[in-house]
Amino acid sequence: MPGQEGGASMLAAIGLDERAERLYSRLVAHGAATAEELAAGCGTGVTEARLALVLLQTRGLIAPQADGSARFAAAPPSVALEALLTGQRHALREAELSAAALAEAYRVAAADHSRRDLVEVVTGHAAVGHRVAQLQLGATTELLALVTGRHQVVRADATGAETDAVARGVNYRVVLERQALDTPESVEALFEALDRDQQVRVVDKVPGKLIVADRARALVPLSEVRDGAEPVVLSVRAPALVRLLVTLFEQTWEWAHPLGRDEDGALLAEPAPGGSPDELDRRILSLLLIGATDQAVAKQLGLGLRTVQRRISRLMALVRADTRIQLGWQAHRRGWVRD
Image (cartoon, rainbow, N blue to C red):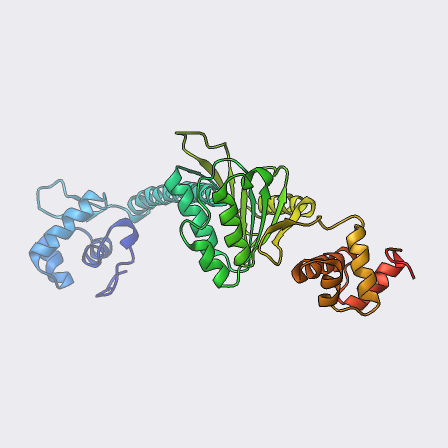
């Protein structure tokens, strides 16, 4: 320290600047001195020396001589500096504890915020409608929906988000509760959905309303919407919960009857996949196995071409056949047709 002429103070941690440190070092090395003597010895102005002496005195590092000579003497560094360093260590320890407490508070807040992101309660017609539109606008591959016959919070494609999603190639699969087809408006919305090549099925009762986008985000109502009441919906992003909701949808889908339109545009429902083929299915299979075309099968049985093709597709899905040759082999193996 003696002879230090510039640069950062080595004792800056205890609040001393470079000038005060030089003065203190001189007092330690050369004994008591006045402000004028210190200014001359350290190459600084008298005013600056007096200010530095005030700083050193407030830190307990120097004290005026009792003889009235205006001289200042350094307190023993082993005592004075150790006291300051001990205080500094205590302050640093307190700062460390405070920093740790703040870090823990931040972690808890971040975790709580993350949980709120995973499951969130949304209330009100406007907020719920906005979330439904967001879900459809954000979908990239698939949207699954269970629709009840009760009052709908958001009318079908009221925002145009559904039409936009279909145009982007999003695959819609919808299961309707039979009661949902009781009004002309509902049937009209169904026809519009079928015209957009959406897959629609119907069951007597669905477990509840549900919308799932890309198997990653879902909306589930928490209560039925009654006249004058605000809807309350749970927005779900938690992967485990979304998987459960997708399983619920898939089980309902398997039990549901596919909806379509015949050649004349009338609504028709076909048996759900699963179980055994009915008599009409067996007749279609028999004709296919003797080489009849789809058009010939439709004409001979008095069916629409699309009806025949849908039934064939359903039979292929039933036996997990990728080709009609595989379907014929499975039909023989299962005894659905006679030789």
